[in-house]
Structures are given as C-alpha cells and as structure tokens.
Image 1 (tube, each protein chain N blue to C red):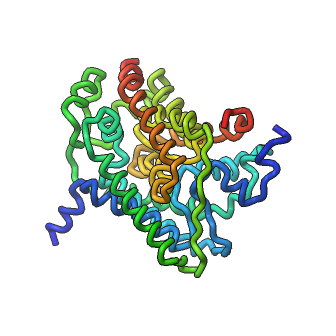
Image 2: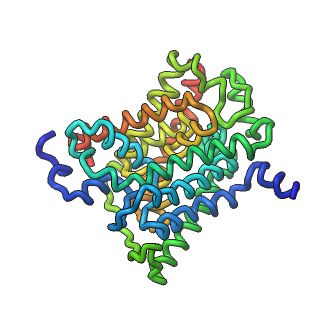
Length: 167
Length: 190
C-alpha cells in the first residue's frame, strides 16, 4: 500500500478521486455559511419522504417493473438537472460568491461496471442508496443506522484495497 | 388553506419530486460551487474518523464539511416530513409485490421501511446479516468503486452528459434487477 496512485496526487486530485461530488470553491466558508447547504438538504429530505423515494417497497417495484414512479422521479430529475447545467454553461452563470462554475469530465474505468453492479445488488436488498439511508434514519427507522455503518465500512474496505482492484 | 395542507400531506407526484431533486444540482452549484452527490460523505466519514494512513483517506476532508451539513439537513428534513407532513395509512403497493411479500410474512405497509423486516429482532439473524450488514456493505463498497452513487452518477453525472456515468447507471440497474428478482426473494425466506 506504500507506492500507489493516490499517494502521488495533489490534494484536490486525491480529494476528488473516485468522486463526483466535490467542493470546487476556493473560498473559505465559515461554519455558519454552511447552514445554507443544510437548508437545501432539509428540503431534499422532505421531498424524499413525501415522494416515497426512500420506500423499500418503491425500490422493489422499480426493479420488478411494477411501477413507473421511480423512473419518473429519476428521469425528470435528470432532465431538470441537464437543462440547469446547460444554462449555467451557456450563460456563464457564476456562483453567489462570484466564482466561475466548472464542470469536469468523468473518465471511464472498469469500476463503473464492477462497482456499479455490486452497488445495484446492495441497492435492491437495502431498498436504499446512500441518500435514502440517511433519510430513513431521519424518519425514525433508527435500526437503519447499522446499514449506514456497514456502508461506511464498505467504503473503508474499498479504500484499503483500492490499488489491488481492477480499474 | 386546508386544501393546500392536504395536498402537501398526500404523497407527492413523481414529476414534482423529479423537478425538486433535479433543482438540487444548480442550487448547490450556485450557492457555493458544490457538485451534488451523497455517497462521498461515507468516504469523508472514513477520512475524518479512521484514515489509518490509507492514501485514499488522506485529504482535507474539512473542505467537504458542506456535505455533512447537507446530509444533516437531509436527516432533519426526513424527520420533519415524517412527523408533521405525513398522512397515516398504508403505503400503496403493487398487488403482485404485496402477494409475494405476504408469502414471506411481510404484510405491514404502514411505513416506508417494512418494519417486519428491518427491526432489532431481525438484526442478529441470517436475514439481518444480509439485509443490514451485507446490503449496506455492498452499497458503500460499490458506490466508491463505481466512483459515485445514484445521486453522483445518475443525477449529477447524467445532467452533465457524462457517458461513464451512463455506464454506471446502467450497471446500477443491472445489479438491482438481478438482486430484486433473484436474490431478495431468496433472502426474504431465510
């Protein structure tokens, strides 16, 4: 584990390794300023519960082709997201802090096949991807905390064996 | 006013949810140049608590605390919605699914998470080992190996028209189809 790719990368490259969601901002924000992301998360959580996105039953129905619901949610979200990203690029919309918003191209690696398949197997069993895991705990299903801890353990084990896995 | 409250309290249509979930992408970008995704928090948790000299966990996780605030809000929002914005009554589910689940003893649809499956008593059984521990492990391991989860790849990645994210999304679905149709029915009868 001594000589490996992650060890030779710069801070940003390492932080954004195998990750899509990163903080691209160079501005330092106070703890209080971070509350705005909490508010977005709060609204997101309400949507998750109200639209039954966090329902184990809805996930089973999706994979058994018994309901259009989840396909509708994800499909519309992608369309709205894509139009937004296009608009940000087209009109050069800046962040509130005045920063240029940059988009990064994702490189293909075999993890997007092997890892994604393993993820899918787990997704149908738990009936939740990472976002809904957090939300399920919020609704009072505290025992799902065990699933979340196990997901964190899975992430850790991936980090440990990363250099030995085919990419 | 009553009508509005009732409208909020009844289950929301998929199109409403889709629009709001989709708007999270530009909201986070415009608020602070943050790219939307959730599974990275699992990695930040490792980096914050148990980096263990593994290069993959040695980075400045404090630059990503915004995402901890995001999931903190997510938990709180789910709590508020469940406490104050829910109508009581069973979740609507497809009759075929209801039928199959009934054969495995799951007949209670009063909650979004089936309580007859995800409960403390089951935690220390073979069923619990699979539904909690192995299921969760696969989600965490697979998300990072794939370089993102449903939010990172299927929402953020596809919104930015990234073909590797499309590949990942397709294989999320492949794994899910195999699991829900072949593995879950077996696990339910353990």
